[in-house]
Length: 153
Image (tube, rainbow, N blue to C red; front, side):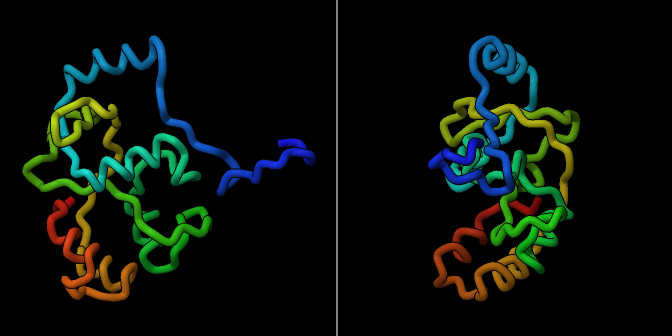
């Protein structure tokens, strides 16, 4: 970025763009027909959209366990970058495919939203995340209440 630019630098130094177009997009659409499907919640869809367009830069995927644990305890990614909220894709144990690294991500109407390589699967403790991130486990808090519906993984 030039010194005369009026734009601020993206957080983390690089604006992430995961949106595909053209031939690459069509290839991924075709491949998705052969992948197991994970149907995601509206909340997860919003997180996925923010990842795709760089709203969560410098993240270029959902957090793995190391980033997740450090964000919970120190509000930093594994590389030391400040990041106050964990961004993970939670699913119910029975909804997780067991035979593929690649999955088709679909919304509540089964529209194809993304294709993703599963790199890591780990369990999470909702009460711990609520306590550390939100400062409460009280179900009157709207996000605590919502988190009760999220998956195990």
